[in-house]
Structure formats: C-alpha cells, structure tokens
Length: 90
Image (cartoon, rainbow, N blue to C red; front, side):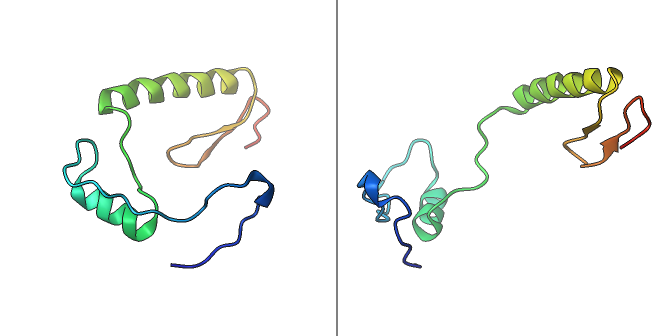
C-alpha cells in the first residue's frame, strides 16, 4: 500500500489503515470486507431502494424542468446533455 503524508498534521489524527476484523458480518458481505481491506474503500454501495431512487430522480427532474421553463439552462444528469433555455443557448 502506498504511504501518504498527513496533509493536516495539526489535527493529530491517526491515519493508519486498520483492516476490518469481522467474522460474521451483518451488513457487509465477506467479499465487501475483503475488498475494503485490500483497497481501503467500497464502491458502489446501494443506500436507496430502487423505488426510492425513482422518487428522488422524479423530484430532481421536476426541479430541473422548472428551471428550464423559467429560462435557465441545465444539464440532464443521466446523459450529460444540455437542455437549451428560453434564450436558445445550451
């Protein structure tokens, strides 16, 4: 593992990597724990149910559409494509 220097020594934090030692995990799978111990992070982690994501996405899409209708310019999050505002710019 690469050794990193402490960017904030005044915080007096212990920044050493300490592997997880969980024999019977309830939230993470053994594979996730192994990956964390090897890489130091987990990605992706599903924190919302698909139905919750659909509700959040619909809410944000409504917010962006409202901004566009008021003449603003916005970007679609899922595709990264621009939606031109009332002025015709993107």
